[in-house]
Amino acid sequence: MSYTSAVTHVASNSNTLEKEVFRASVLLYANGPASAAGNCSYKALIEHLGLANDDIQMTYLRPVVNWRTPTSVYTDLYVTSITEVDEKAQSLSTQVTIAHGWYSDFTKWNPDDFCGIKVCPIKKDMVWTPDIVITESIKTEFATKENQYVQLQNQGVIVTSNTFAVTTACKMNLHKFPFDVQSCSFTLQSPIHSSEELIIRPFSGASFLTLSSKQAFQTQGEWEFLSINMSKANVSTLGELQDLLIYKITMKRRPLLYVINFLMPVFYFLILDLASYFIDSSGGEKLGFKITLLLAISVLLLLLQDMLPSTASDVPLIGVYCVVIFSLIGISVLETILVNFLMAKGNRTGPGRTTESLSALSDAVKDTKGTPDLVTDRHEEQLPALDVLKQILVEFQAAATHQNQQERKCLSWTRVATIIDVTFYFLYVTTVIVFLITLFRSWFLVADVP
Image 1 (spheres, rainbow, N blue to C red):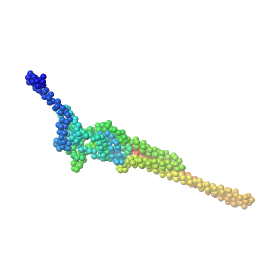
Image 2: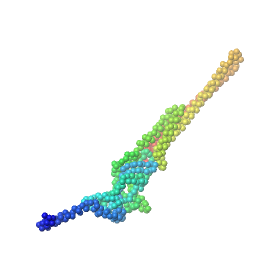
Image 3: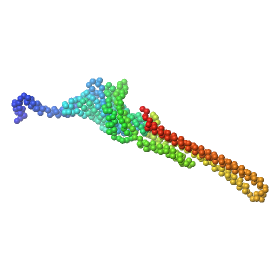
Image 4: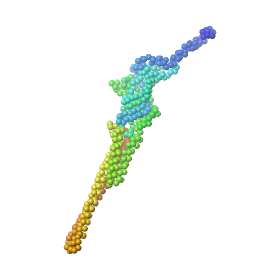
């Protein structure tokens, strides 16, 4: 039986209700599949929204029916890595992911009309996108290929996301270097739209952003990521207020490398200088040892100069640490020079003249035992012999007195040198202990002044 005969047969032998049901089925069979196929495609949805045409309202103007209605842009910022921190240039290089979402009055649809389509990705240049930049940026590049798409949602929400490699200016406080904690700001701002036209709002809370960033963090370098905080602000530009969203990234330096390679060697040099007190001062070994320590710290100070910026508002504590220890060892060298001088002066004063006086006495005694003429003429020599004996006695007493004076003088110089050395050592140890305690308190116990 043909299709036309079947229709005629059913129409003639059925009641009116059956005729209507059959007619609807025939129409659905004839036209339904093509219509359903058209409504289930992205193309049909894009044509329905008017995005297939190069409409200026959709691509260049804010997506609002009434221009007085501000566009709210909801933003999230995630830190995925900290690649470099340049203390001298006061800059921070990071990799961040920034997501934006905003509402459009012209991109809403009913999912039931399009086979349940709720999300549609389209090219970015088919719709208006907010002009939001990072104001602290020195250099901004896409970490990967730029995302060319945005996502449309049936409620009228448009979402986009990009990952950037950003180098930003960051004012750093290096007072507690290398035990420092730094905070750098990322300020999101529209350079064109005022706060009456575009409002930048945070989408997620600080705790969620911090947790998500830590989970996505890709590097384990010198810096440890701590937290992200956010705040709102306004700035006046050409007489108009503009909305700002400020993300503050807090990070902490891992100081182990600096402690091992810098702080500990300087501290060991200080301990060696204290231990050099027990080296004998009679030779030049003690002085040479201290000068070697002084030169070693000088080399470390040159390394420190390359690490820290020359424009710091206050002197870093590590600089105070090195300079004070360098000064203490320098004063110790001067004290060693003075003690060696006093010791040498005491040693020079004693033996010389005493030996000379004893030699004169020995010659005089030899003269009294004299020549063979004294044996034959003893009577004539009595008086001269007495005079010679008196003279010998007088010179002996004078030599003994002079020797005692010289020995006392020698002992006084040595005693002065010893007193100076012992007194300086105790003052030196006391100064070192007080200095290290004060530095420890400033480094770890005193809070930073904001």
